[in-house]
Length: 114
Length: 114
Image 1 (cartoon, rainbow over the protein chains, first blue to last red):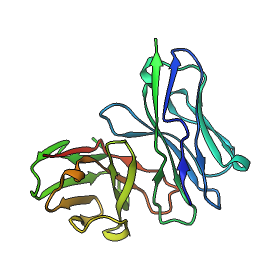
Image 2 (image 1 turned 120 degrees about the vertical axis):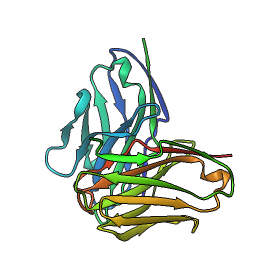
Image 3 (image 1 turned 90 degrees about the vertical axis):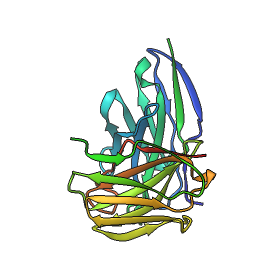
Image 4 (image 1 turned 60 degrees about the vertical axis):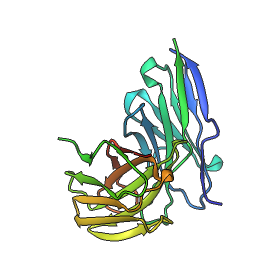
């Protein structure tokens, strides 16, 4: 079945440590790919997106993501996590044959230890 | 100015009541969406309108009825509210359908049915 999977439901990292959040998708063609962040009680903020071109995408707040076609993955990374990064992170895709329906993964909760 | 604004932010109501959530965007976008975030934080699309025309209608109970008086507004009316309708409802907009324009989300409406 077509889907977006975030294998890690909950991740805890120490402040200053590096971070990688995983995202895999199962669609035939390369979809449009997004990462969103949701702080507690807040809406969704776009971190970055990939449509085509360079497979390493830079986003806001020091985040980057790498698209790997062979692995159907779009993992989010940050070299040094700050306490304010604690939030819910969502990977999302728009399948290329779609009417613009944005399909979300289950989300990963990031906890940052001091 | 808030790009995508939803009202109210919080809504507490009794089972069986009818309620509406309003959404307005000032971005000049043609397409608007309603998403539901359940208690496990899973986000699922409910409806999408492009220039006042319904283009996505997911498997949603008939008690939910979207209305788009113009392309800047997309309201959600819910009849005969049930406990299971308790969730956070997000409105979003994009420049057009197709997914390659990105999406802007409102801050959400937390609906609690008691």
